[in-house]
Image (cartoon, rainbow, N blue to C red; front, top):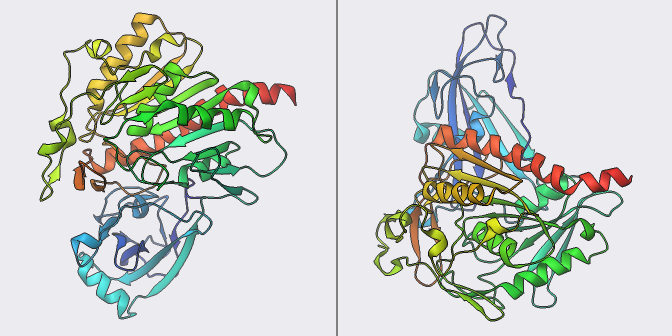
Length: 423
């Protein structure tokens, strides 16, 4: 599975031989992700990434998964660079690994040598998002645009709804992984599809998300009586917090780099309208990589709850929360949001919450071993620009691994306890 570790070893070398490992993935026809590392074989002529230290390359030190998380994109033309994500989760990602003799410290040179078939040895391995037996169903009913992933075996299963940030349409890889860990998980789109709003700057109606909660609660494969879990990042995290504040049947929330105020775009629910906080989208520069936090208007510390677009999530004492923040986030003001979130939960004396802060982590905290994303292209009205994510590669990737396992443990504790007690 793509969130599990892989053990990479090399055998049959001479003692103390310098070798260069080159790894790459074809993410599209025009964009690859690649990394390299140099190792010195041991006295018995082996290299073991669980044991040995990289002395040079995309990373250094003893990092068994370094070849994966240190990958960076390469395309001849910048516009052909794509974000690292798997759109078709029914097929695996194929990682290609090549071994070259000697000290080669130039990716251009390694790329050429790979094409010229001059590697001492090559191999490949697959990383899957759907475990054996996981089922995938496209959902287009009652206005919902989503994909449901159901674990193997007999249900009912704990139910999750998973939402991403401003990426248009349905992104499935997290829900596929959640199902592989025993959750019935709904990957829910809310912008970008022809039946949905086309931009993050448009108002979103919580009644759409209420339909998703009821869909999961009443589904035959879901243990809806235990409540539904929510997982979101960026705008998706903001929506999870709004759902927790205003909707019923929510059991727990995992919010990653989100704020408890609406924006960009407002929130509508019945007679309620929560306007967007001010973000100067008109000042974004399409010729540069933009740090969106520089265009956000923030209140004084402690002032978020006085904004008209604030979600009073902290008042819902029956909902368990896990908030995850990369404090070097340059897309969302996550360091500020972490302080505000903790302030309000403490004021309320909320009985069940966890806040995870990662000092040098950026915005896109993905499942473990995914490459560090320094920037990404945000489509849609008011955007169509590159946004900086912030963070430092090593610390960010370590945060991804740490918080993923803590998320899974949190969700299992909150959603699976009652199911297991009945078996």
